[in-house]
Picture 1 (spheres, rainbow, N blue to C red):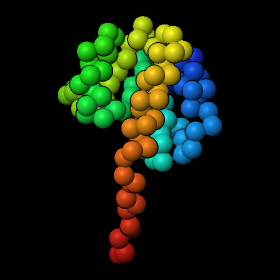
Picture 2 (cartoon, one colour; picture 1 turned 180 degrees about the vertical axis):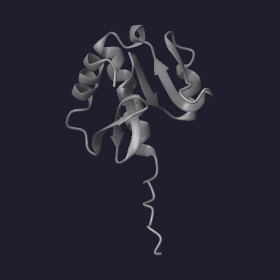
Picture 3 (cartoon, rainbow, N blue to C red; picture 1 turned 45 degrees about the vertical axis):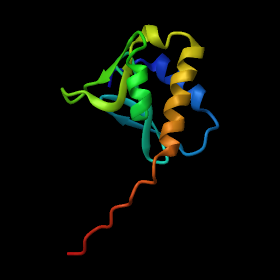
Picture 4 (spheres, rainbow, N blue to C red; picture 1 turned 180 degrees about the horizontal axis):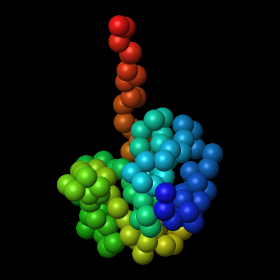
Length: 117
């Protein structure tokens, strides 16, 4: 899996000590989950994050930001930020804080019950 390890390490540092954070390989990169919900991650050299619909529209007006189109169609609430948009640690912290707050605000994931045969 080829992704920017330095960016992943910067995200790890920004999330250090926060509750419910786990790391998982997904989308061909690495993602950081909050209580099982995707929060932020790295795909190739882009920062990817999940934000609210309101934040999504606002964030798209910022430079170096585009909708996540991993499936070939833009996914509302999911963004890519090019390296220039998170080069400074202060910028990265803004993105990580936004995504973390959104992930915490989402309802708990329902656990699937295995069907008896």
